[in-house]
Every structure is written in C-alpha cells, then in structure tokens.
Image (tube, rainbow, N blue to C red; front, top):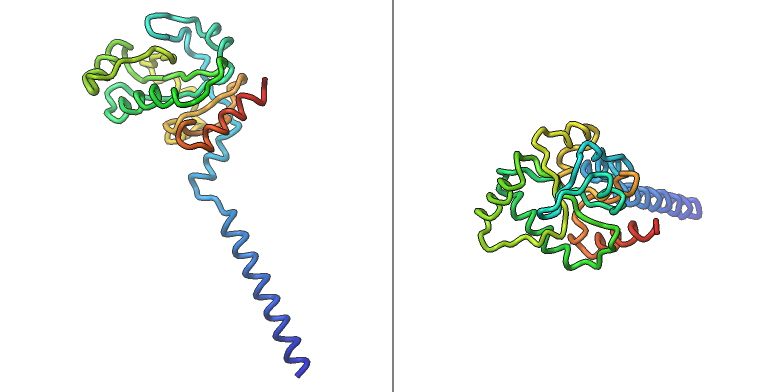
Length: 193
C-alpha cells in the first residue's frame, strides 16, 4: 500500500513537472513575426544617404536635421500606393495625441518622384485633408532607403522604426498604436537625456 501511494505521488509530481514545463515553453515561444521583430531591434538603420529633408516649403540639410532630432520615427511610404495616403494622414493626426519631446520627430521617407506629386495624390485621395507641416519628408525616387537597409525586412520597415542618435532601431510600430507603445516611446526618449 505504501509503495503504491509513493508511486502515485511520484507520478503526480512528474506529471505536474511536465505540465509546468509545457506551460513555460508554450508561453515563451515567439511567433515568427515576434522573433523577427526581436532580431531587428538593435540593428542600425541607414538614413545618411539623403542630402536634405523637407518640412513644408523649407529644405533642411540632413546633418542639421539629424543634429536637431536624436530620436526619429521612420515611416516608409510609396507615392501611388492607396493605403499609404491614409497612413500618412493617420501619422500626422494621431501623433498630436502624444506628449512629444522637442528632440523627437517623424521622418516620412517616400518612394516617389516629387513631393508635389505625392501631395497632389494625397489631396486627390482625401480632398478635405490639410497638412500641418509639423513633421519631415524626404523623397526617395531611386529606392536608396531600401537598397541601403537590406538587413531589415520590408514588412518590418512598413510598421515604422524608431531610431536613436546612433540610428539604432529601438521600437517597431506606431507609438500611438497603444498606451504601451506610447510608454515605450517616452521611456526610450527619456533614457538618453
């Protein structure tokens, strides 16, 4: 009888241990998307191929722009891409909901021939929208941004990248997407102050 009870307890302990291991490993297993995002964090994004940045009607030398803004959310868009216009508008309007530091900005990197054409297409898509010229734009007619960042998957770039003063990717995704994303943006920008 005693041996039988002891075996039952041992078997139950083993089963409990296997159950705990199963739960532990199933909870820490990352999806392929999460794994790729984790691998991308800490990589360096190349943006120095641009000579100047545009803010409204003003051209700003790239070096001056980069010195002014140590933290930049890179938002990659394409002219002629119907989903890109609402995304541009969403970034412009939703960023107003965040308490942004003066050392942070958004840089829209737009694959297209000209700023004017992009804005014409944007207004054709959404005639009521009026840009506030708060953030910055660079046109990339030669696909230089993508060519200089081959180690970053395109779908990750499409989510947007927050880079630090050394161009290291610190956050992937829109900071206004959730309260947690906004908290991460604030924490990243504040830790290097």
